[in-house]
Image 1 (spheres, one colour):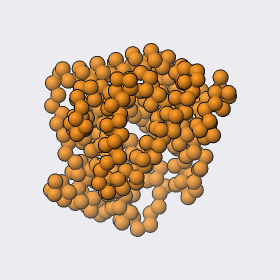
Image 2 (tube, rainbow, N blue to C red):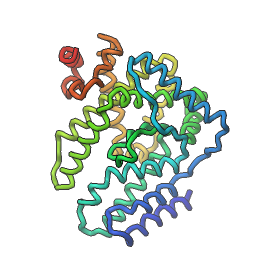
Image 3 (cartoon, rainbow, N blue to C red):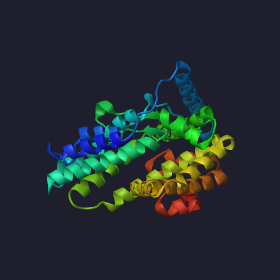
Image 4 (cartoon, one colour):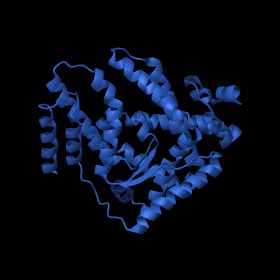
Length: 322
């Protein structure tokens, strides 16, 4: 562990002396991977097939319960922690590209070192905690457009052990959750472009010294709907069988030392939990009143997304959309 920490710090400090951009992405990759063990990924063929079976069965059940048609992502990967870091560095580079092109150049050496270290620390922390990820590849080049689904196998195995739950059952539940997100983007072909446009507008304004409050507001409302609808699908399709896993995982997220809690707050992980809860309350109310398929109407077109006010007053959304 101490050697990993030394390698991580060395990679960051060496970043300040080379290159011109505000972030040394090669140093980010080296430092982030030095800060976390990759984990075992020696899977027999039967285990790889078990992941594939979980994903296929999740798709069929979600299609039935949600009344939505969607395809699975083009790429489904079983990863270790280092694989996850590499995949998400590509994502962060896409998001940070406007800042690198137009960002501040004051004290470039210090800025480069601090930015590199912050990014490496964040990716290393997340790599230890992420179980699965659906990635719609926002801001990707045309040749890379699509969507991907990742499962961080060492984290799933480790977390199942910490929670003292049956590993295959836990793996299956994580697959259900990530496929729920795939269902949303599959049901709403416009959603990725909608999020991407607002993200680009917000970043562009920010790099010019302003703050596009409306773009980030729209992003927050849309992501609250995304997280909340996934929770609804999980509730109605799977959680009668998996409610105990949800309770144990939520309890674990509330634990951890002061540093872990601080990092979670800094990374906005508490905010994401509140998005889940707020969005879930909205969709449960709609589904209880009109059924899950009525709730799925939110993905028919961008205008059907709930407003900020409607998230807290679902009856107003029902009156407007139905």
